[in-house]
Image 1 (cartoon, helix red, strand yellow):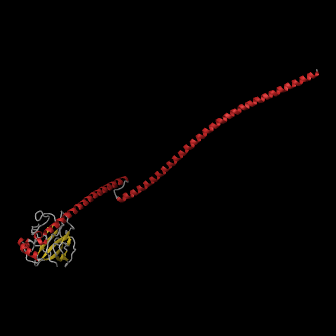
Image 2: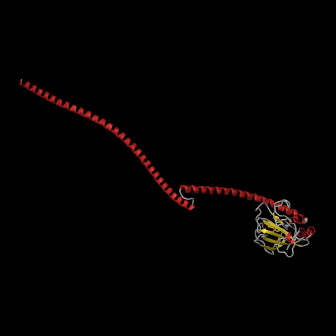
Image 3: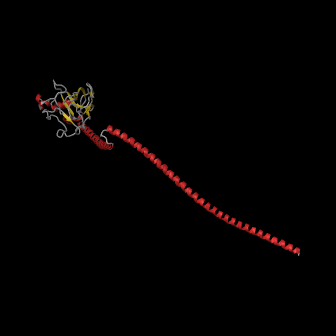
Amino acid sequence: MIKADQFIFPIAFTGNYPDGFAGYTFLQVTQQNALHPGIDWNWGAGEADYGKPVQCIANGQVVHQSRETAIGYGIIVVVKHELSDALYNFIKTKYGIDSRIIYSFYAHLKDEIVSDGQELNVGDLVGYVGKSGTTVSHLHQELYKAVPGTSWRYWPTLAKGWTQEKLKQYYIDTYDLVVNQPQSTQPTDTLESCQNQLKVEIENKNALWQEKKDLVTDLEGKNSQITSYENFQKSVAITLETEDDQAKILGGAIEYSEIKNQLREARTMIKNQQLSISQNLQLYDELKEKLQISVDQNKNHLQALQGVRDELTATIKINKTITKNLEDLKKDNKFIYKHLIFGLYIKEEK
């Protein structure tokens, strides 16, 4: 197991520690009238940090992980850390805890993703922020040396004599350690890393907020469509004179649709008949026009024939006159001829 020579924050967090922090801090009195042995890390408000990655705060090895369904710690992971000489001396001097082995404790996790005996480096994934064993998402995290005669899920209370002085003999303020550990462990880089991570998380949250805003807008539109559909359903029920029941409305709508189709077919047939009548009327007008032209032409022909008939009648009259004149001429010729013969005869007699 690699020795722990650096400690970091388990997650990006919201608020200033300890005043203005978004959760219980180290040794703060809880609602159960107990001294809080660890830190409740939160990011954002409400469930904003649910599912956020939890990182191992130092090099170590998983010595326990378990699940509990009752109210309490929920899903937990415990990691054992063997301290480097520098950190051992620092913790012994600053906190009065003389132990080369300390444990980091992570509770209320979302899932179990590590196994007993698994070695972890600082920053490796331990799990995800959840709310197992509680009602609001957050990470409860502790840092302590072994407490003899206790289980991994042990919770110290004032009723059992856990005063502030006694707690400080076993438990360490993780935030204070990360900020004040020896400079060789690069606490500034750790803070800067968390600040950068927080910045990225804020940007991601802003993007997620916009997505949720768009989703809400879309849902409002869907709700408006649903309301419109319900109003339409009621109006259809009134039109079909049936109950506001989808099955009955569907049956009525199908019947209405069939009637509508029949009306559409009848309308189409009437339209076709109107078109046929219109075409026949157009043909009638064309034939009537042609007939009128023919009548006009026949009138002209009739008038021409009438003129020919009149001319013919006049010619016949002329012929009759000529014939009569010829007859009269013949008679005159006969008379003249008789007189001529008679004159010749008398002349010969003399």
